Length: 502
Image 1: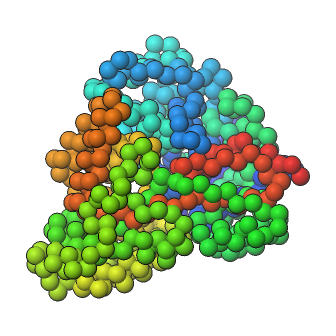
Image 2: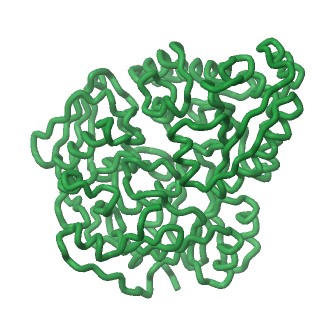
Protein backbone atom coordinates (compact mmCIF):
# COMPACT_ATOMS: atom_id res chain seq x y z
CA UNK A 1 0.00 0.00 0.00
CA UNK A 2 1.18 3.52 -0.79
CA UNK A 3 2.77 5.29 2.14
CA UNK A 4 1.04 8.24 3.73
CA UNK A 5 1.76 11.40 1.75
CA UNK A 6 1.86 14.61 3.70
CA UNK A 7 1.57 18.27 2.86
CA UNK A 8 5.27 18.68 3.58
CA UNK A 9 6.09 15.95 1.08
CA UNK A 10 4.16 17.69 -1.65
CA UNK A 11 5.64 21.05 -0.71
CA UNK A 12 9.11 19.57 -1.22
CA UNK A 13 8.08 18.44 -4.70
CA UNK A 14 6.91 21.95 -5.47
CA UNK A 15 10.21 23.51 -4.53
CA UNK A 16 10.07 23.69 -0.75
CA UNK A 17 7.25 26.13 -0.18
CA UNK A 18 5.58 25.00 3.03
CA UNK A 19 1.87 24.35 2.81
CA UNK A 20 -0.52 24.05 5.69
CA UNK A 21 -3.98 22.62 6.03
CA UNK A 22 -5.95 24.89 8.36
CA UNK A 23 -9.35 23.88 9.67
CA UNK A 24 -11.80 26.01 7.70
CA UNK A 25 -15.36 26.67 8.78
CA UNK A 26 -16.59 25.99 5.26
CA UNK A 27 -14.76 22.76 4.67
CA UNK A 28 -17.04 20.06 3.24
CA UNK A 29 -16.85 16.87 5.28
CA UNK A 30 -16.96 13.97 2.83
CA UNK A 31 -17.11 10.22 3.37
CA UNK A 32 -16.81 7.21 1.07
CA UNK A 33 -16.25 3.51 1.56
CA UNK A 34 -13.37 2.71 -0.79
CA UNK A 35 -10.14 4.63 -0.94
CA UNK A 36 -7.84 5.33 -3.88
CA UNK A 37 -5.26 2.66 -4.66
CA UNK A 38 -2.68 5.08 -6.06
CA UNK A 39 -1.98 8.64 -7.18
CA UNK A 40 -0.78 8.29 -10.79
CA UNK A 41 -3.69 9.56 -12.93
CA UNK A 42 -2.41 7.82 -16.06
CA UNK A 43 -2.29 4.37 -14.44
CA UNK A 44 -5.25 4.12 -12.11
CA UNK A 45 -8.30 2.07 -13.15
CA UNK A 46 -10.25 1.69 -9.88
CA UNK A 47 -13.32 3.93 -9.55
CA UNK A 48 -12.14 4.90 -6.07
CA UNK A 49 -8.89 6.28 -7.48
CA UNK A 50 -10.53 8.04 -10.43
CA UNK A 51 -13.04 9.96 -8.30
CA UNK A 52 -10.26 11.11 -5.93
CA UNK A 53 -7.76 12.13 -8.61
CA UNK A 54 -10.26 13.97 -10.82
CA UNK A 55 -10.72 16.49 -8.01
CA UNK A 56 -7.07 17.54 -8.41
CA UNK A 57 -6.03 16.69 -11.97
CA UNK A 58 -7.60 17.97 -15.18
CA UNK A 59 -7.73 16.56 -18.70
CA UNK A 60 -7.96 18.74 -21.79
CA UNK A 61 -11.75 18.39 -21.82
CA UNK A 62 -14.30 16.78 -19.52
CA UNK A 63 -17.84 15.42 -19.64
CA UNK A 64 -20.59 17.50 -18.07
CA UNK A 65 -23.73 16.31 -16.30
CA UNK A 66 -25.26 15.35 -19.67
CA UNK A 67 -22.11 13.53 -20.85
CA UNK A 68 -21.42 16.32 -23.35
CA UNK A 69 -17.87 17.56 -23.98
CA UNK A 70 -17.01 20.63 -21.90
CA UNK A 71 -13.82 22.72 -21.57
CA UNK A 72 -11.16 21.88 -18.99
CA UNK A 73 -7.50 22.72 -19.67
CA UNK A 74 -8.49 23.38 -23.29
CA UNK A 75 -10.79 26.33 -23.91
CA UNK A 76 -11.64 25.34 -27.50
CA UNK A 77 -10.87 22.67 -30.08
CA UNK A 78 -11.49 21.73 -33.68
CA UNK A 79 -11.03 18.75 -36.02
CA UNK A 80 -10.08 19.08 -39.65
CA UNK A 81 -12.59 17.81 -42.23
CA UNK A 82 -11.44 14.18 -42.29
CA UNK A 83 -10.81 13.85 -38.52
CA UNK A 84 -7.06 13.32 -38.94
CA UNK A 85 -5.98 16.45 -37.08
CA UNK A 86 -7.21 17.86 -33.78
CA UNK A 87 -6.20 21.34 -32.65
CA UNK A 88 -6.57 22.33 -29.01
CA UNK A 89 -6.40 25.91 -27.74
CA UNK A 90 -5.45 25.99 -24.08
CA UNK A 91 -7.11 28.17 -21.48
CA UNK A 92 -4.66 31.05 -20.91
CA UNK A 93 -5.62 31.11 -17.25
CA UNK A 94 -4.88 27.44 -16.57
CA UNK A 95 -2.23 26.99 -13.88
CA UNK A 96 -0.80 24.05 -12.02
CA UNK A 97 -1.01 24.02 -8.25
CA UNK A 98 2.65 25.10 -8.05
CA UNK A 99 1.76 28.35 -9.84
CA UNK A 100 3.25 27.43 -13.22
CA UNK A 101 1.16 28.02 -16.33
CA UNK A 102 -0.18 24.96 -18.14
CA UNK A 103 1.53 25.04 -21.55
CA UNK A 104 1.49 23.08 -24.77
CA UNK A 105 4.79 21.49 -23.70
CA UNK A 106 3.04 19.99 -20.65
CA UNK A 107 0.27 18.58 -22.84
CA UNK A 108 2.78 17.06 -25.25
CA UNK A 109 4.82 15.52 -22.42
CA UNK A 110 1.67 14.11 -20.81
CA UNK A 111 0.51 12.36 -23.96
CA UNK A 112 4.00 11.11 -24.76
CA UNK A 113 4.03 9.56 -21.29
CA UNK A 114 0.61 7.97 -21.87
CA UNK A 115 1.76 6.56 -25.22
CA UNK A 116 5.01 5.18 -23.81
CA UNK A 117 4.37 1.46 -23.32
CA UNK A 118 6.70 1.50 -20.30
CA UNK A 119 4.18 3.71 -18.47
CA UNK A 120 1.43 1.05 -18.65
CA UNK A 121 -1.09 3.84 -19.00
CA UNK A 122 -4.70 2.70 -18.60
CA UNK A 123 -5.98 4.63 -21.62
CA UNK A 124 -3.03 4.17 -23.99
CA UNK A 125 -5.11 2.32 -26.63
CA UNK A 126 -7.34 5.37 -27.02
CA UNK A 127 -4.43 7.42 -28.35
CA UNK A 128 -2.33 5.13 -30.54
CA UNK A 129 -3.56 6.94 -33.66
CA UNK A 130 -1.59 10.00 -32.54
CA UNK A 131 1.36 10.10 -34.97
CA UNK A 132 2.81 13.43 -33.89
CA UNK A 133 2.13 16.26 -31.45
CA UNK A 134 3.01 19.77 -32.58
CA UNK A 135 3.22 22.82 -30.33
CA UNK A 136 3.37 25.93 -32.53
CA UNK A 137 3.11 28.13 -29.43
CA UNK A 138 2.54 27.78 -25.68
CA UNK A 139 -1.24 27.86 -26.04
CA UNK A 140 -1.71 25.59 -29.08
CA UNK A 141 -1.43 21.82 -29.40
CA UNK A 142 -1.97 20.02 -32.71
CA UNK A 143 -2.49 16.26 -32.65
CA UNK A 144 -1.58 14.74 -36.02
CA UNK A 145 -3.34 11.42 -36.47
CA UNK A 146 -2.30 8.46 -38.57
CA UNK A 147 -5.94 7.71 -39.37
CA UNK A 148 -9.36 9.26 -38.72
CA UNK A 149 -10.29 9.12 -35.04
CA UNK A 150 -13.70 10.66 -34.38
CA UNK A 151 -13.95 9.55 -30.71
CA UNK A 152 -10.51 10.90 -29.77
CA UNK A 153 -12.03 13.95 -28.10
CA UNK A 154 -14.27 11.80 -25.91
CA UNK A 155 -11.24 9.71 -24.95
CA UNK A 156 -9.47 12.84 -23.76
CA UNK A 157 -12.30 13.59 -21.31
CA UNK A 158 -10.87 11.39 -18.58
CA UNK A 159 -8.45 11.79 -15.70
CA UNK A 160 -6.57 8.89 -17.31
CA UNK A 161 -5.62 11.54 -19.89
CA UNK A 162 -4.78 14.20 -17.30
CA UNK A 163 -2.36 16.98 -18.17
CA UNK A 164 0.56 16.90 -15.74
CA UNK A 165 3.64 19.15 -15.58
CA UNK A 166 6.45 18.17 -17.94
CA UNK A 167 8.91 19.00 -15.16
CA UNK A 168 7.22 16.53 -12.81
CA UNK A 169 7.41 13.82 -15.48
CA UNK A 170 11.10 14.55 -16.00
CA UNK A 171 11.71 14.40 -12.24
CA UNK A 172 9.88 11.06 -11.94
CA UNK A 173 7.40 12.50 -9.45
CA UNK A 174 4.10 11.38 -11.03
CA UNK A 175 2.38 9.09 -8.55
CA UNK A 176 4.57 10.23 -5.65
CA UNK A 177 3.26 13.80 -5.45
CA UNK A 178 0.20 15.53 -6.84
CA UNK A 179 0.63 18.66 -8.96
CA UNK A 180 -2.54 19.11 -10.96
CA UNK A 181 -4.51 22.08 -12.25
CA UNK A 182 -7.94 21.11 -10.89
CA UNK A 183 -10.28 22.74 -8.38
CA UNK A 184 -8.67 21.19 -5.31
CA UNK A 185 -5.06 21.07 -4.11
CA UNK A 186 -3.62 17.99 -2.45
CA UNK A 187 -3.12 18.34 1.30
CA UNK A 188 -2.51 14.95 2.88
CA UNK A 189 -3.51 11.34 2.27
CA UNK A 190 -3.49 8.52 4.79
CA UNK A 191 -4.58 5.48 2.75
CA UNK A 192 -7.79 3.79 3.89
CA UNK A 193 -8.21 6.45 6.56
CA UNK A 194 -8.53 10.09 5.49
CA UNK A 195 -7.42 12.85 3.16
CA UNK A 196 -7.54 16.63 3.04
CA UNK A 197 -7.78 18.86 -0.02
CA UNK A 198 -7.92 22.65 -0.12
CA UNK A 199 -9.65 24.83 -2.68
CA UNK A 200 -7.49 26.06 -5.55
CA UNK A 201 -7.82 29.88 -5.55
CA UNK A 202 -6.29 30.04 -9.04
CA UNK A 203 -8.48 27.42 -10.71
CA UNK A 204 -9.23 28.52 -14.26
CA UNK A 205 -12.61 26.80 -14.07
CA UNK A 206 -14.01 29.40 -11.71
CA UNK A 207 -14.34 30.15 -8.03
CA UNK A 208 -14.66 27.24 -5.61
CA UNK A 209 -17.20 28.29 -2.97
CA UNK A 210 -15.92 26.03 -0.20
CA UNK A 211 -12.51 26.13 1.47
CA UNK A 212 -11.70 22.48 0.98
CA UNK A 213 -12.61 18.84 1.52
CA UNK A 214 -12.05 16.76 4.63
CA UNK A 215 -12.43 13.15 3.44
CA UNK A 216 -12.97 10.13 5.66
CA UNK A 217 -12.85 6.50 4.53
CA UNK A 218 -15.53 4.51 6.37
CA UNK A 219 -15.69 0.99 4.90
CA UNK A 220 -19.10 0.25 6.43
CA UNK A 221 -21.79 2.24 4.62
CA UNK A 222 -24.16 1.88 7.56
CA UNK A 223 -21.49 3.76 9.53
CA UNK A 224 -21.51 6.42 6.80
CA UNK A 225 -25.27 6.77 7.18
CA UNK A 226 -24.88 7.05 10.95
CA UNK A 227 -22.26 9.79 10.47
CA UNK A 228 -24.67 11.63 8.17
CA UNK A 229 -27.46 11.33 10.75
CA UNK A 230 -25.23 12.83 13.45
CA UNK A 231 -24.00 15.54 11.07
CA UNK A 232 -20.37 14.41 11.36
CA UNK A 233 -20.45 14.11 7.55
CA UNK A 234 -21.90 16.63 5.09
CA UNK A 235 -21.69 14.64 1.86
CA UNK A 236 -21.19 10.94 1.17
CA UNK A 237 -20.80 8.71 -1.83
CA UNK A 238 -22.91 5.58 -1.46
CA UNK A 239 -22.61 2.34 -3.42
CA UNK A 240 -25.04 0.14 -1.53
CA UNK A 241 -28.58 0.63 -2.90
CA UNK A 242 -30.11 -0.58 0.37
CA UNK A 243 -28.31 2.09 2.38
CA UNK A 244 -29.20 4.67 -0.28
CA UNK A 245 -32.88 3.72 0.02
CA UNK A 246 -32.81 4.72 3.70
CA UNK A 247 -31.55 8.26 3.11
CA UNK A 248 -34.88 9.94 2.16
CA UNK A 249 -36.36 8.78 5.46
CA UNK A 250 -33.79 10.74 7.49
CA UNK A 251 -34.79 14.31 8.32
CA UNK A 252 -32.34 16.83 6.95
CA UNK A 253 -30.78 14.50 4.39
CA UNK A 254 -31.19 14.47 0.62
CA UNK A 255 -30.45 11.68 -1.86
CA UNK A 256 -28.93 12.49 -5.26
CA UNK A 257 -29.14 9.63 -7.76
CA UNK A 258 -28.51 9.30 -11.49
CA UNK A 259 -28.39 6.43 -14.00
CA UNK A 260 -24.80 5.66 -14.95
CA UNK A 261 -23.00 4.27 -17.99
CA UNK A 262 -20.86 1.86 -15.97
CA UNK A 263 -21.91 -1.77 -16.15
CA UNK A 264 -21.87 -4.85 -13.93
CA UNK A 265 -20.43 -7.82 -15.78
CA UNK A 266 -19.28 -11.39 -15.31
CA UNK A 267 -15.92 -11.43 -17.06
CA UNK A 268 -14.94 -14.84 -18.38
CA UNK A 269 -11.35 -15.70 -19.26
CA UNK A 270 -11.50 -17.32 -22.71
CA UNK A 271 -7.82 -18.28 -22.49
CA UNK A 272 -8.40 -20.73 -19.61
CA UNK A 273 -9.79 -24.24 -19.40
CA UNK A 274 -13.36 -24.87 -20.47
CA UNK A 275 -13.97 -21.22 -21.30
CA UNK A 276 -11.73 -21.50 -24.35
CA UNK A 277 -14.76 -23.20 -25.94
CA UNK A 278 -17.35 -20.90 -27.55
CA UNK A 279 -20.16 -23.25 -26.55
CA UNK A 280 -19.16 -23.12 -22.90
CA UNK A 281 -19.14 -19.32 -22.84
CA UNK A 282 -22.48 -19.23 -24.60
CA UNK A 283 -23.87 -21.78 -22.14
CA UNK A 284 -22.91 -19.51 -19.25
CA UNK A 285 -24.68 -16.60 -20.94
CA UNK A 286 -27.81 -18.74 -21.40
CA UNK A 287 -27.71 -20.06 -17.81
CA UNK A 288 -27.51 -16.65 -16.17
CA UNK A 289 -30.73 -14.88 -15.15
CA UNK A 290 -29.69 -11.25 -15.37
CA UNK A 291 -32.91 -9.81 -13.97
CA UNK A 292 -32.69 -12.10 -10.94
CA UNK A 293 -29.14 -10.91 -10.29
CA UNK A 294 -30.26 -7.29 -10.61
CA UNK A 295 -33.24 -7.82 -8.30
CA UNK A 296 -31.15 -9.62 -5.68
CA UNK A 297 -27.96 -7.58 -5.68
CA UNK A 298 -29.29 -4.12 -6.53
CA UNK A 299 -32.89 -4.32 -5.32
CA UNK A 300 -33.98 -3.97 -8.96
CA UNK A 301 -32.50 -0.46 -9.03
CA UNK A 302 -31.18 -0.58 -12.56
CA UNK A 303 -31.64 -2.07 -16.01
CA UNK A 304 -30.46 -5.29 -17.67
CA UNK A 305 -27.94 -4.30 -20.31
CA UNK A 306 -25.94 -5.47 -23.27
CA UNK A 307 -22.36 -4.31 -23.89
CA UNK A 308 -23.34 -0.78 -25.00
CA UNK A 309 -24.94 1.24 -22.23
CA UNK A 310 -25.27 4.66 -23.88
CA UNK A 311 -28.75 5.51 -25.14
CA UNK A 312 -27.58 6.61 -28.58
CA UNK A 313 -26.06 3.23 -29.43
CA UNK A 314 -27.44 0.43 -27.29
CA UNK A 315 -29.33 -2.48 -28.87
CA UNK A 316 -32.55 -3.79 -27.26
CA UNK A 317 -31.56 -6.83 -25.21
CA UNK A 318 -34.29 -8.84 -26.95
CA UNK A 319 -32.07 -8.73 -30.05
CA UNK A 320 -28.97 -10.03 -28.26
CA UNK A 321 -27.87 -13.65 -27.87
CA UNK A 322 -29.59 -15.60 -25.06
CA UNK A 323 -30.79 -12.72 -22.93
CA UNK A 324 -33.82 -14.83 -21.98
CA UNK A 325 -32.60 -17.53 -19.60
CA UNK A 326 -32.64 -20.95 -21.31
CA UNK A 327 -31.28 -23.79 -19.16
CA UNK A 328 -32.03 -26.47 -21.76
CA UNK A 329 -30.02 -24.59 -24.35
CA UNK A 330 -27.22 -24.06 -21.83
CA UNK A 331 -27.02 -27.78 -21.04
CA UNK A 332 -27.02 -28.68 -24.76
CA UNK A 333 -24.26 -26.17 -25.49
CA UNK A 334 -22.16 -27.61 -22.67
CA UNK A 335 -22.71 -31.16 -23.93
CA UNK A 336 -21.82 -30.22 -27.50
CA UNK A 337 -18.63 -28.60 -26.23
CA UNK A 338 -17.65 -31.78 -24.37
CA UNK A 339 -18.69 -30.64 -20.88
CA UNK A 340 -21.95 -32.52 -20.34
CA UNK A 341 -20.97 -33.05 -16.71
CA UNK A 342 -20.01 -29.42 -16.23
CA UNK A 343 -16.71 -28.18 -14.78
CA UNK A 344 -15.23 -26.28 -11.85
CA UNK A 345 -13.86 -22.74 -11.83
CA UNK A 346 -13.12 -19.83 -9.50
CA UNK A 347 -14.81 -16.44 -9.67
CA UNK A 348 -13.11 -13.50 -7.99
CA UNK A 349 -14.83 -10.42 -6.58
CA UNK A 350 -13.63 -7.34 -4.73
CA UNK A 351 -14.67 -6.72 -1.15
CA UNK A 352 -16.86 -3.64 -0.99
CA UNK A 353 -16.34 -2.28 -4.51
CA UNK A 354 -18.97 -2.57 -5.66
CA UNK A 355 -20.83 -3.60 -2.50
CA UNK A 356 -23.03 -5.78 -4.69
CA UNK A 357 -20.08 -7.94 -5.81
CA UNK A 358 -20.48 -10.67 -3.19
CA UNK A 359 -24.23 -10.93 -3.78
CA UNK A 360 -23.71 -11.07 -7.55
CA UNK A 361 -21.13 -13.82 -7.18
CA UNK A 362 -23.42 -15.84 -4.93
CA UNK A 363 -26.42 -15.60 -7.27
CA UNK A 364 -24.27 -16.49 -10.27
CA UNK A 365 -22.80 -19.43 -8.35
CA UNK A 366 -26.31 -20.71 -7.62
CA UNK A 367 -27.54 -20.19 -11.18
CA UNK A 368 -24.57 -21.90 -12.87
CA UNK A 369 -24.81 -24.85 -10.47
CA UNK A 370 -28.11 -25.69 -12.18
CA UNK A 371 -26.18 -26.63 -15.34
CA UNK A 372 -23.32 -28.39 -13.56
CA UNK A 373 -20.81 -25.52 -13.29
CA UNK A 374 -19.25 -25.51 -9.81
CA UNK A 375 -18.00 -22.05 -8.87
CA UNK A 376 -15.68 -21.27 -5.97
CA UNK A 377 -16.02 -17.63 -4.88
CA UNK A 378 -12.80 -15.81 -3.98
CA UNK A 379 -13.32 -12.47 -2.25
CA UNK A 380 -10.30 -10.15 -2.42
CA UNK A 381 -9.28 -6.75 -1.10
CA UNK A 382 -9.69 -4.13 -3.81
CA UNK A 383 -5.99 -3.49 -4.44
CA UNK A 384 -5.30 -7.24 -4.69
CA UNK A 385 -8.29 -7.69 -6.99
CA UNK A 386 -7.16 -4.84 -9.27
CA UNK A 387 -3.67 -6.34 -9.58
CA UNK A 388 -5.11 -9.76 -10.49
CA UNK A 389 -7.59 -8.16 -12.90
CA UNK A 390 -4.92 -6.14 -14.70
CA UNK A 391 -2.79 -9.28 -15.00
CA UNK A 392 -5.73 -11.27 -16.41
CA UNK A 393 -5.11 -13.77 -13.63
CA UNK A 394 -8.62 -15.16 -13.07
CA UNK A 395 -11.07 -17.78 -14.35
CA UNK A 396 -14.04 -15.47 -13.95
CA UNK A 397 -14.39 -12.05 -12.36
CA UNK A 398 -17.38 -10.13 -11.09
CA UNK A 399 -16.62 -6.57 -12.18
CA UNK A 400 -18.01 -3.07 -12.35
CA UNK A 401 -16.45 -1.36 -15.36
CA UNK A 402 -16.67 2.24 -16.46
CA UNK A 403 -18.85 3.44 -19.30
CA UNK A 404 -18.30 6.18 -21.87
CA UNK A 405 -20.69 8.05 -24.19
CA UNK A 406 -18.85 6.67 -27.23
CA UNK A 407 -18.53 2.91 -27.91
CA UNK A 408 -15.00 3.08 -29.32
CA UNK A 409 -13.67 5.03 -26.37
CA UNK A 410 -15.45 2.65 -24.01
CA UNK A 411 -14.18 -0.60 -25.49
CA UNK A 412 -11.20 -0.28 -27.80
CA UNK A 413 -8.74 -1.13 -25.06
CA UNK A 414 -10.42 -4.54 -24.67
CA UNK A 415 -11.78 -5.42 -28.13
CA UNK A 416 -9.14 -4.32 -30.62
CA UNK A 417 -6.05 -6.34 -31.45
CA UNK A 418 -3.72 -3.63 -30.14
CA UNK A 419 -5.88 -2.74 -27.12
CA UNK A 420 -3.76 -2.21 -24.02
CA UNK A 421 -6.17 -4.31 -21.93
CA UNK A 422 -6.40 -7.18 -24.41
CA UNK A 423 -4.62 -9.30 -21.79
CA UNK A 424 -7.58 -8.62 -19.46
CA UNK A 425 -10.19 -9.48 -22.10
CA UNK A 426 -8.20 -12.49 -23.37
CA UNK A 427 -10.35 -12.66 -26.49
CA UNK A 428 -10.32 -10.98 -29.88
CA UNK A 429 -11.41 -11.91 -33.38
CA UNK A 430 -11.21 -10.24 -36.78
CA UNK A 431 -14.82 -9.09 -36.73
CA UNK A 432 -14.58 -7.29 -33.40
CA UNK A 433 -11.34 -5.59 -34.41
CA UNK A 434 -12.66 -4.60 -37.84
CA UNK A 435 -15.94 -3.19 -36.55
CA UNK A 436 -14.24 -1.21 -33.81
CA UNK A 437 -11.84 0.39 -36.26
CA UNK A 438 -14.62 1.10 -38.75
CA UNK A 439 -16.50 2.85 -35.96
CA UNK A 440 -13.42 4.87 -35.11
CA UNK A 441 -13.03 6.14 -38.67
CA UNK A 442 -16.68 6.68 -39.65
CA UNK A 443 -17.88 10.28 -39.34
CA UNK A 444 -21.56 9.74 -40.29
CA UNK A 445 -23.59 9.24 -37.05
CA UNK A 446 -26.16 6.90 -38.64
CA UNK A 447 -23.47 4.69 -40.14
CA UNK A 448 -21.58 4.60 -36.84
CA UNK A 449 -24.75 3.40 -35.13
CA UNK A 450 -25.09 0.55 -37.65
CA UNK A 451 -21.46 -0.44 -37.19
CA UNK A 452 -21.68 -0.55 -33.43
CA UNK A 453 -25.00 -2.45 -33.50
CA UNK A 454 -23.19 -5.20 -35.41
CA UNK A 455 -20.31 -4.99 -32.94
CA UNK A 456 -22.61 -5.32 -29.93
CA UNK A 457 -24.55 -8.27 -31.33
CA UNK A 458 -21.38 -10.12 -32.26
CA UNK A 459 -19.76 -9.46 -28.88
CA UNK A 460 -22.83 -10.76 -27.03
CA UNK A 461 -22.90 -13.86 -29.24
CA UNK A 462 -19.24 -14.86 -28.77
CA UNK A 463 -19.70 -14.23 -25.03
CA UNK A 464 -16.20 -13.54 -23.74
CA UNK A 465 -18.02 -11.69 -20.97
CA UNK A 466 -21.60 -11.86 -19.74
CA UNK A 467 -23.02 -8.36 -19.37
CA UNK A 468 -25.51 -8.05 -16.51
CA UNK A 469 -26.96 -4.61 -15.73
CA UNK A 470 -26.44 -0.90 -15.19
CA UNK A 471 -27.35 0.89 -12.00
CA UNK A 472 -27.30 4.33 -10.41
CA UNK A 473 -24.82 6.57 -8.68
CA UNK A 474 -25.91 7.64 -5.20
CA UNK A 475 -24.83 10.52 -3.04
CA UNK A 476 -26.30 11.63 0.28
CA UNK A 477 -25.98 15.18 1.51
CA UNK A 478 -27.11 17.47 4.27
CA UNK A 479 -29.87 19.85 3.22
CA UNK A 480 -27.48 22.80 3.56
CA UNK A 481 -25.22 21.40 0.80
CA UNK A 482 -26.09 22.98 -2.53
CA UNK A 483 -24.90 22.78 -6.12
CA UNK A 484 -23.70 19.19 -6.57
CA UNK A 485 -24.50 17.78 -10.01
CA UNK A 486 -24.27 14.04 -10.60
CA UNK A 487 -23.09 12.75 -13.99
CA UNK A 488 -23.66 9.54 -16.01
CA UNK A 489 -20.02 8.60 -15.39
CA UNK A 490 -20.40 8.63 -11.59
CA UNK A 491 -17.90 11.48 -11.28
CA UNK A 492 -17.59 13.53 -8.10
CA UNK A 493 -16.13 16.49 -9.99
CA UNK A 494 -19.42 18.27 -9.19
CA UNK A 495 -18.04 18.90 -5.69
CA UNK A 496 -16.20 21.84 -7.26
CA UNK A 497 -19.57 23.63 -7.58
CA UNK A 498 -20.79 22.96 -4.03
CA UNK A 499 -21.63 25.71 -1.57
CA UNK A 500 -22.72 25.47 2.05
CA UNK A 501 -25.76 27.37 3.32
CA UNK A 502 -25.40 26.71 7.03
